[in-house]
Each structure stands twice: as structure tokens, then as C-alpha cells.
Amino acid sequence: MRQAWITGHGGPDKLVLRESPDPQPTRSELRVRVKASGVNFADILARLGLYPDAPKPPMVVGYEISGAVDAIGPDAHRDWIGKEVFGIVRFGGYSDSVIIPEDQVFEKPSSLIHEQCVALLVQYLTAWQLLVVMGSLSSDDTVLIHNAGGGVGLAAIDIARHIGATIYGTASIGKHDFLKSRGVHEAIDYVNRDWTQEVSRLSQGRGVELIIDPLGGHHWKKSLKALRHTGRLGMFGVSTATVSALPGPLRLIPIGLRMPLFNPVGLMNKNRSVFGVNLGHLWHETGKLRSWMRALMQGVTEGWIRPHVDRTFPLESAGEAHAYIEARRNIGKVVLVA
Ligand SMILES: NC(=O)c1ccc[n+]([C@@H]2O[C@H](COP(=O)([O-])OP(=O)(O)OC[C@H]3O[C@@H](n4cnc5c(N)ncnc54)[C@H](OP(=O)(O)O)[C@@H]3O)[C@@H](O)[C@H]2O)c1
Image (cartoon, rainbow, N blue to C red; front, top):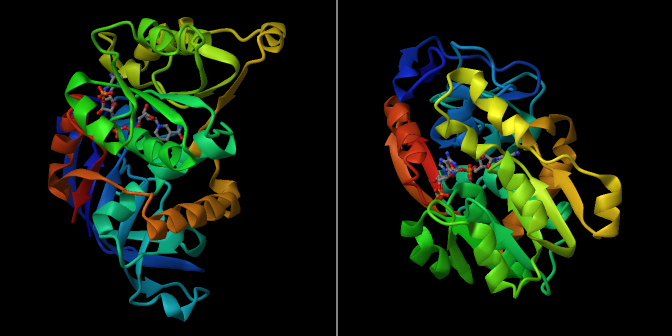
């Protein structure tokens, strides 16, 4: 098999293609010949040494694959052989062949291509958890989606639009027209401007009911302040850590120092709540993930879930795919094709 390895912490040039013998499934595992692998921002954090959950280099990252089953373990259902599937793996997805437990795969819908299927996994599941499961978004609410042009952002737009909420989204300015075409009511440039003033102006000083924030550090403080009474803040990433001039994991220090400290009495008196989401810590809850995916698949059938693939790169160009996202050029999913 061919895999894109991260050979050490550093720049995109640390991604190198290597070959090794095909893996063999055991127990109830399946082997999938991969057509498409999803790239996530977490993969970039792992390459930079900023993702504590990632294995140490040399490592193969990648949470999402889509392809066809070509071998099964002795305890797996025989029906899987030859089936087109997509699924979520705990690292190792930047490969043209992966071993995956049976309960982490889903049958590929015929209406989607493999590249779209990988967009449905981490990013849509995360958005579902943020908006529906923990954020309780309703049609009367306004939601602020930070990083709205990323994969989670576009997924959140689909879900919020279906719920009927008013949608504000922050993104680099070149993405605003596209975001409006997807259903964002107000697009906000957060790179060159103070987004809090914009949110205050748009909401006549009231703030918004739900904010989903993967920026981290002082942005979480700002997001907390931008909540309306009864508002909820969902924190789920530290995107801003990548731009620091500090080396390696030291980049996390300013992020940590500038995080808010939550005061229970303050939250109580302002009728606000805060919550965290880390899909990578839900491997023991595959039942929940499967039920969320069923709801998303219903959305695919009904047409309100619209996984958007921005660009594909060959597996051997995984470094270019990382550089493309870090340059803030992607709108939606970036995919590696084997
Ligand atoms: N906790 C979880 O379970 C979970 C799951 C999935 C994702 N996440 C987090 O959610 C965030 C977005 O993930 P994604 O997969 O949607 O991303 P993505 O599709 O890879 O898109 C990333 C986008 O983030 C913006 N960006 C790039 N560098 C940035 C920086 N230094 N600071 C702020 N924004 C930057 C850029 O868009 P703009 O400049 O246009 O905004 C870029 O296009 C990441 O922080 C990721 O780690 C967390």
C-alpha cells in the first residue's frame, strides 16, 4: 500500500509518500481500498506538533476514508465484500488501503461520490454535535459560525439553514459571496476587522444565541461576551495556534494564557452556558455517532445536506493540500485521492 507519512514536526515538506505491504484484517475488521481520504485541520495541527492526541512522528494521520471493501476479518459479515463504504478511522487515513472496524463504516449512498462521502464524516458529525446535540439551535435563534468557510463551517451552515436559524459566519473576505450563496445571512471578515463590533451592530447590541468557535485563546473570551442572555458557546478548536512565530508546542502557550476562566456564578446570572466538543474523544460512543450519521444521511436523501468538495490532491501531494488550507484558500472539503 501507499501512505503519506509525516516524518517529523514541521512544514508541509514533512509529508512523504512511502510504500509497505498491504495490511490484513483480523477479527471483525474490514480492509478498504481507498479512493478518497479527507484532510482535516487537525492533521495540520498534528504535523506542527500542536495536536496532543496525534501519534509521534513518523506517523500517518487522516480520520476519513471512502472506497470499497476488498477483504474482511474472520468475524466480519460476509456481505461487506465488494461494498462501497465510507468510514472514520483513528489515524492512518492518508493511505490507499486501510483496516477499519466494522462499526466505524457506513454504506456509501449512490447519490454521492467518494470525495463527498469523506466530507460527511468528521466535519458534519462535529457540526451536528455542536448545533443539534449540545447547542440546541432553534429557528428563533441566531447562530455565529466562526471559520464558516472551512469544512465544519459549511456543514454547520447546512444544518442551521435546515433548522431555520439566522446565520452569521466569519471567514476570509474572498469567501463571503460563496457563503451567502450557501445560506449565510451575514458574512463577517474576522481577519482584518474586529468581528465583535460587527456582531453587536447586526444584533442591535443583543448578541446571538449560539456561537461555535474553533479559533481558541482570546477569541473564546470575545465569543462569550458576544452571547445574548440564554446564549451557548461551543468551543472545539485552536485554529489560531498555527500562525504563532513560536516553535512547535510552545505556540499553545499564548493560546492557553489568553483563554477565559469561567465563573459559574457569572454564567448563572447572565443565563449563559459553555460547552466543549472533541469528536476524537468519542471512540467509545460509536452508537451515538451512528445515530447522528443516520440523521445526516436522511438530510442527504432530502437534499439539505450538501457536502461541498473544494479541491482534490493526489495522495502523494498531501503536503500541497496542507499548504493550501494553511493559506486559507479552501472553501469546504480538501480531499486526497489515491
Ligand atoms: N473538536 C473537534 O471535534 C473538531 C472537529 C473538526 C474540526 N475541528 C476544528 O475546527 C476548525 C476548523 O476545522 P475544519 O476541518 O472545518 O477546517 P478546514 O476545512 O481545514 O478549513 C480551515 C479554514 O480555517 C481558516 N484558517 C486557516 N488558518 C487559520 C488560522 N491560523 N486561524 C484561523 N483560521 C484559520 C481558513 O479559513 P478562513 O480564513 O476563511 O476562516 C481555512 O480555510 C479547526 O480548528 C479544527 O481543528 C475540531
